[in-house]
Length: 284
Image (cartoon, rainbow, N blue to C red; front, side, top):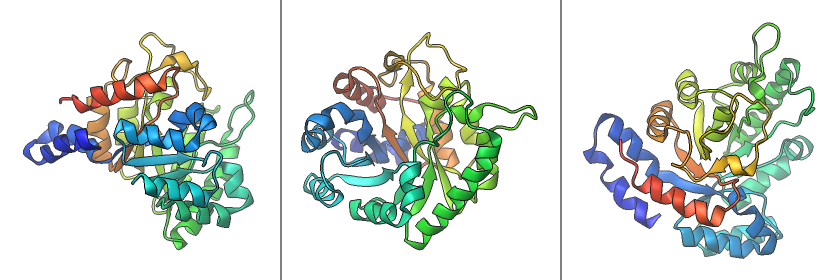
């Protein structure tokens, strides 16, 4: 994005923490789920909004009312690059070849599974996690054979420990192969679940490749591994509880290559520009 490129150009002049904090500007995109309501009105109109905000990189979440081919053409017409594509667990399970073909048609280099289906009352069990890890490895192998990368986006409910202190997240992280399965850290959801995003980045270096940049309201209750929260708890980046310089510093050291603003709040057309203004002026 134009107004962020000037900051990226100065990154080589910075050292230590400052260099790490500035690096994310090179690949700061938008998760198009942020414009889900606008997409319902007009898919192309939502893409126009993304361009108007200054984005050149996006992460897809479906293709609105357009076919994959038509959506890809609309992205190209606006010089928007689909870095990654969110694809549902069931879609991957039911027709993996189609999911791979769709991602390639969009120009995405990575398929991200954004949600693991589970019983909302019982939660995701460690036993479930063993099965999920096996699926992820198989899908990662197929993606690699097709020239793509496969990744997973935890939502917070994966951090509930069983009687032995093990968690579904730990099982999946332990049993998936690093060369087949990368991770996307949603800062809001891990913080909401009572986890420290900086420590998670440090604990699994090389596994985290993508970051969802989303802040949580000051005073919002945390420690809830539910994978759901009121939209009012999701605020513009910089207005909430997250220590963003520390997060970006840890992300750079952990190997994160792309960051995406994902706005799930009540006023994305106001908060996305506000988030960008904050990130543009972020100093170490």
